[in-house]
Image (cartoon, rainbow, N blue to C red; front, side, top):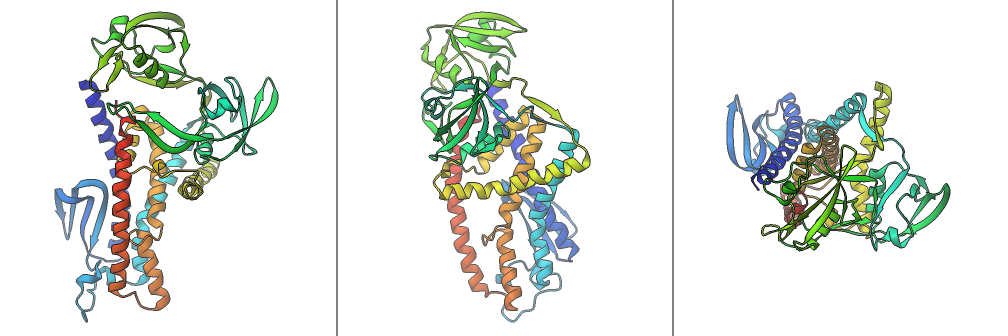
Length: 460
């Protein structure tokens, strides 16, 4: 129990460190360009709300605040409301600077997020990353009563095309299926060397809750119920005194069968173990090439409201990936392609949402982002760095959108000021920003509620 609590705390701490780093470099961009333009910076804060830690150097107070999901740079004269009628802005006030200088300060935050992600990807591609050994997708498992099963797809089939285009690995395939909820998607598969075209209609991905609520978690994206070939393995030592430990199950054992049913997903282990209601089950594991069968009885867990045997599970793919290292030129080209795909991904999701092929449940807020970042960091640092690049780019792009209270919103106001020769009235700007703030606060609360409904996916 204490191991689980420590693991969950560590997950959130690592996730907060990752998100805080991205916020820090974002605000650092604003800070440096403000200083370069001789704007007085009163506060540099990581987080919002009550200031927990403070340090003053020169004219600027540096602090860490209570709400860690964001940050701000408070500049002198940033708020026109604080300037009295007829009073001229100070020499070092933000509003006293040229439109170009203010635009540079606003643009610097998103830019540094995008630039950081680009440099990070360049380094990763030159050092070497795990990539699919082949773009052909070999089906390892087909869910019962799934769209794939209805279309006649079986384990061993090889998916070579989706929507008439060659497949580019499982991640790209999942994204295309994920944004096609309810739409007919043509797949070309090879079976026995012969190409076969089938049409699948993705259904919403629903995951059984792993916590005590017992409710399902709707993910808001499409799924057809096929999975790559993989092994379900024991990724942590069994809980002390648990049925698994008593039966002799060890770290890194592969769970091959339970009661004669082949295991391809950890959800199958949860389903069968809980369904045993404490009756003895036979678990066949593979250890160092040997096949061993263990008999054990699950114990009811009051916290999770289901029968458990005391193991943590993870996936190990069959060797379908390889390490690819690139020279600087090839790494630059690959980074450009990846950056563009990451940059445009949010727009693809918005487009498909308006088409009804993605639900709002698919969106993640700060709680889920922190949990995912922490989880991925604990699973593999290189995967975490790739995720860090993805989130950094999306943070930059989102902040460039002209949404009134974002950096892009400020750039929009500055653009209007440049065209008109004078800024919008303070009252007009305030009305626009207040309406936008009300919308975003409501949206933030809604997304956070969705986040907490998904939290059990990440808890150990």
